[in-house]
Image (tube, rainbow, N blue to C red; front, side, top):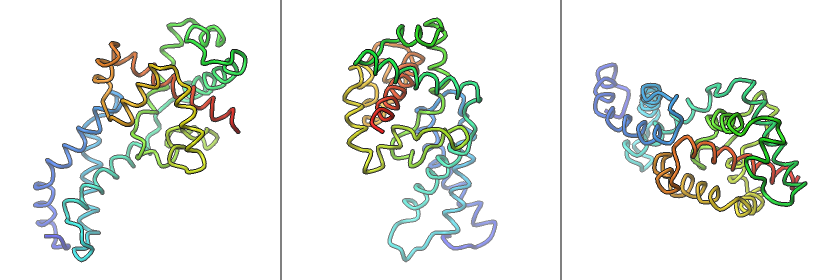
Length: 232
């Protein structure tokens, strides 16, 4: 069934591998914002499965299951990358936070606190934390799936600090920036990107809500951007 044999073979393939596609979608969904629908991930995964079916070469050495699993996950990530995650107003707010954090780092010589950032922006702490929640929706993906910046606004945005980790010349700068994060944010980044815990699990470790985890993650990313900008 690993060569093109018509619709019947494809139907059998989809039925047999649907549980695998669903497992992949569930594993990815728990690490993404609640706005991402499971069915959308599954649909993208099924497209990836059919693509694997057409491309598989039995003589290449890998099993079809292994090959298909990679194609399915890749298709889901591609679907996430193509989405217009954030409104322009939120993107502008995110860039304002990055610039504000950079100014305060320069002025204070240390990572600024949330209240200091909010005051510099001229907004309340609650509004600042809501902005962090909003901007965080476009930043939660594992390291290895951020080979390029999927969340820039119109080609003008800066590369994600997490994406920069994959670029050799940026690695040392990024690792130094992560080391400079406040301890709780540094722990959060390690739990999410290295230990691959989901938001609920990280919240349990830190003793905070999932929403608060999102805020802290977004703030950590802004700090990383500020540090990388400072090194340019």
